[in-house]
Length: 366
Image 1 (cartoon, rainbow, N blue to C red):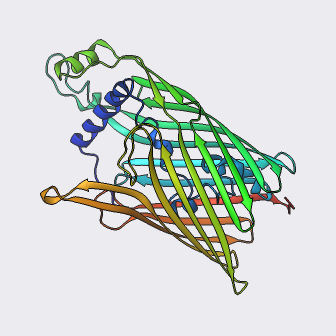
Image 2: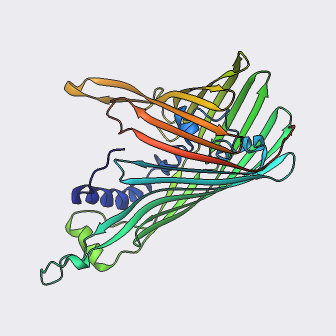
Image 3: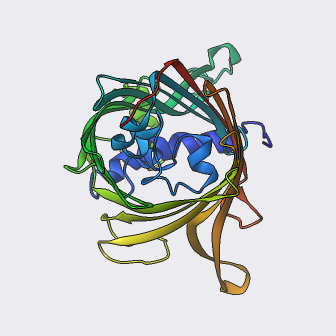
């Protein structure tokens, strides 16, 4: 990925945005906790997040907790790292899942999206107008999510799962929020088809923001004409995903998995393919080709956007993702995804790497 230096101007914009966005959200629930919509795992991201009916590994705690019951190891660990905005933002994910018995599974996940080492130049100039670079400090602005998942097999065709999640968002020591939410998922198998449903924030998720601003920072807000942030409540409205997938086998060595998802939001008109108020729908399609379940090639398309281009002409684009994966002796899986392929002005492409480990593997008949 390309990297740019953290210029003072870009850092200033980030700080202003981070401090003022939560105050704006206190008036509307739109676009809250968006870091939880990016996705996890190079396998799923390589298929453009069309994964709600496919999820069958430790990342299911994020995509659809019902899929945790597919894990055929006593313990499975998954890790992921990537960077966004030319290396400015770090995105990390880790999860561990294990079987409680033959019909139930449990998982714990942690996700962080953060910008580190942001220069704090508020004390650069003292009261006498002297500049002292030793007074520059740094801070981090980060979004964190902790998820606890439980899944159970109700019958050979039906699986269910739930998430309890705790949200922690911070901007240095002067702004922070705690939040709590619930997710629920279902997977159903019918002949050669698999269907999935995932409800995120089914009871709405509430983030309580608090600010610790000293007199100096309040003065800066006043001088620059910005509203001083107040303690507030941020609401994330429910969103859902519906998916269907089917596997095909060719010549007993080559397999094909085709999957399609619909992502449904309820917080007002969004810039997606099917806009509505309050409900909007964004489709995604994914493919995965495997050779003996060892080598995998993946591709997907989704994230429809439209924007005004040159001469105010409307441009319509969809994000193309692709990826590869390899499984080593059913113990280690290494996945890579290249997302946002093509020049569509939405974002720079991102390289995503993830690993999955099976510990004390055993065969299961469920």
